[in-house]
Length: 341
Image (cartoon, rainbow, N blue to C red; front, side):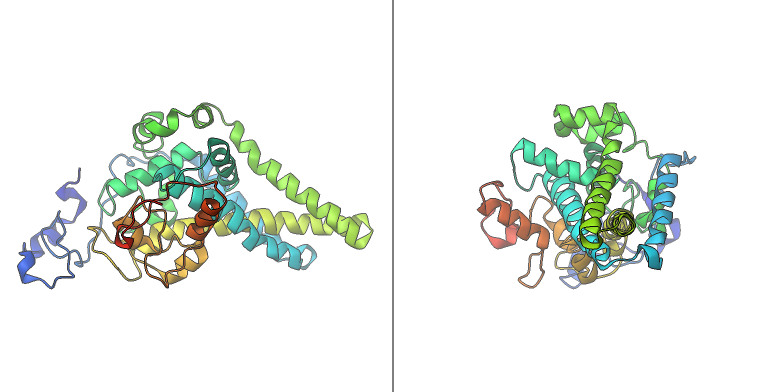
């Protein structure tokens, strides 16, 4: 439920109520101000985040991972195979874990896969340190419920950095508490695997274990290539810095850019009542998540690229899973005609 407190009083006074008949057909009437949705507006902070309760574990983790990525750019830790692990990791951990699993599968139920495969994708997502499946889904579902209005957890209309990263630094009782998560994730909390993740933090071990596995692979290949333990350690550490820390930072900022950039810059195929945009650069980097206006217009659709030229690698992956018999009941955009395949 939104209130007039989500806009400055001056904006409300200076934005006269108009009839849709007086506006061009492509201008949407903002339901809160009564004026065109194109009028610039600024939101207050979401209700409940003040007085601030800082999430120090999140702040420290984000700072440490960013610092840990810096040695990757020193000559002794550089390798081309390490650099190659970044886009590979962005696809496997980011595209499959965050985009495909957390977002299109768990949040919006845009398709169905067997439970053991769903859980495997969720394990990949956990290796990005973006929280448990239920906590991620709760924040995103609340975002859609109140997109670009005051209760939205991360609207950049507060300011860009709030929408990009700062919202993570303070506790929001609507999405960061057990009650908030259970409100938005009744379906996920029925699953004993996801429910157990909310009751203990053993899932945090996946990140260091994945890092050790990548280091071990680098050590083995480095020893095979050089025949020396020094060469093995050099490649192992290169893979750690590039394939784990740099990759994590890249996936973070790609995910956060969908929250921030695509609600500020880009074009719109649909008038949706909030400020979502399609941004081609974010779409390229994020595997199709940057076609964000399309997504807000048709949230359940497993495809975010609606035009023929809006390439959506995440949806192409889902189509591959369908071809192999793994995925079924794909929800397609309404504009395509056939709703489910």
